[in-house]
Image 1 (tube, rainbow, N blue to C red):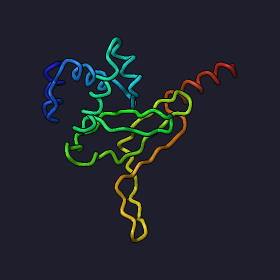
Image 2 (cartoon, rainbow, N blue to C red):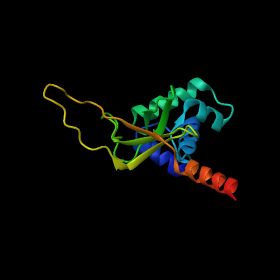
Image 3 (cartoon, rainbow, N blue to C red):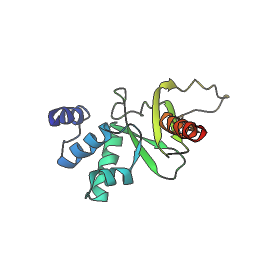
Image 4 (tube, helix red, strand yellow):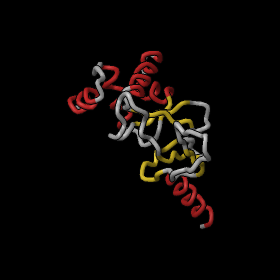
Length: 150
């Protein structure tokens, strides 16, 4: 597994230090975007500054992209293979924030439609955040509701 992690870092021209390997391994295990606090909690006793610098390096090298979900915390999600260092992130997809569990999900299969702006406006970045209830919370609430009705 370490060789796979090292390969992923090397492809993005990131030196594979022990901390970077741990952070990448943690991110690969996540099903949703995570905050710095989530990474810190998930890795246990780790220096917050080192974790922050690792995430910033990953962002600069297009391993992760940031998600502003309105929670007040920056969240990080792994980029797909289309993001290249030195270019803008290719993360033009819908992000979904669950109002119940407060998790943020990348939905790369849901592409943001093209937006036609009037003359004189030059878009540089497009973000689309949808808020609602995620699949897990819908199922959990349906099960609880069914139990109450029986």
